[in-house]
Length: 247
Image 1 (cartoon, rainbow, N blue to C red):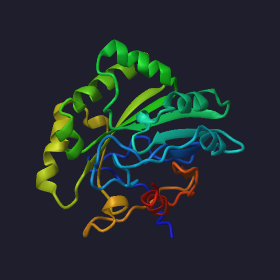
Image 2 (image 1 turned 90 degrees about the horizontal axis):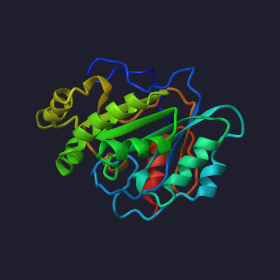
Image 3 (image 1 turned 135 degrees about the vertical axis):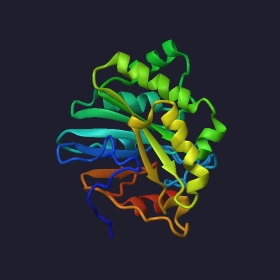
């Protein structure tokens, strides 16, 4: 059963950026792969460097709604390492009814020199939302991650044309003292106003975590697509468990 609730505030007391609204078109949340170049132990899509499943461009295109405007959110695993990532972007860009591309990434392979990053962002087109993942695990492995976030903010603002950055900041609910530095680092970098700060939830690799809240959805105007091409409606847990058994 899907746990459907009203929108909650982030841990900063603000409404989430890029939140579902009644005006937002149908969104496809496309897990392009279960392979990731990081190994967050709580991954909600059960992805890691061991994953070997990659969404085909045929299954991807077949997942687009038959009618009406829609948005495509490329996620994973890590979508930017998909061998056909440019083609996944192009298929969304050129579809006459796709009105926005959203990219969820850990930033590992993104260019970190301003001119090169700007060229890379231009390839993604517009309207565009970049959602950069931030947590203690990623920051420990990539000390330059917040500098990348600041550079993304600046380059997206310079390019304009409805391009935005959202930071998906996730904290462990059972380690408030240990994870306080993550939020503080985001604030010190001047990025807190761009951040959706939430506690991690008990699904995916974290499904057995005691004391973690179970996930819920806000609205059902979206479809979850897995790397094997199967769709799971708005069922976050069902989608996650299906990801768990993929090779």
